[in-house]
Structure formats: structure tokens, C-alpha cells
Image 1: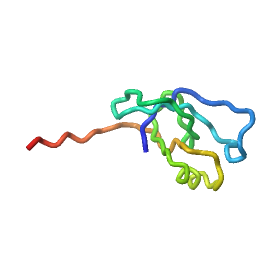
Image 2 (image 1 turned 120 degrees about the vertical axis):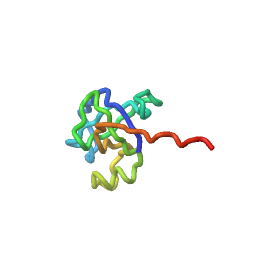
Image 3 (image 1 turned 45 degrees about the vertical axis):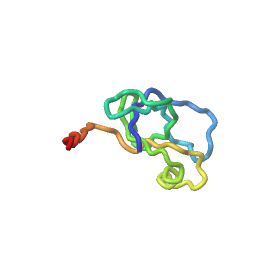
Length: 95
């Protein structure tokens, strides 16, 4: 799982059958502080995320296909949650 920020939507007039009726979003991976991490990617939205939302990404093809219940879907990344708040644990004291 990874954190990301939705930066836009993707419009495709012709899609694989498994993507029909599903919203595709451009997502910029981020660290817990909101800093960009790597290149943007396309993710299938399962939670009705909007542009600017911080989201939880599932980046594993087999798990993604199981969630959308389509065995041969060409999907690698799903948006599976909208993040309200990130809280980091305090660093342990040095010994």
C-alpha cells in the first residue's frame, strides 16, 4: 500500500471490458508528509475520490483484480481509500 494525491482524471473512449464504467484517475505517489515520491500513475478509483484528495493505493495486480472481481483485468493499481489524517508514531528514544 502507498499514499497518493489525485491530480486529475483519465478519459478513454475505448477501454478493456473490465474497465467499462470505472473511473480512472491520475495519482501522484506521496510520502506521509505530502512530498511527491516518483512518477504519477493511473489508478482505478473504487471509492469516488476527487482531484486533490489524498488516497490509499493498492499496487498489486492480483489483489486489485480480486477486489474488482475480474480475473483477467489489465489493472495494477487501485484507489482503495480516501485519507482523512496521517499520524506518525514518535521515534523511539536512542539507547
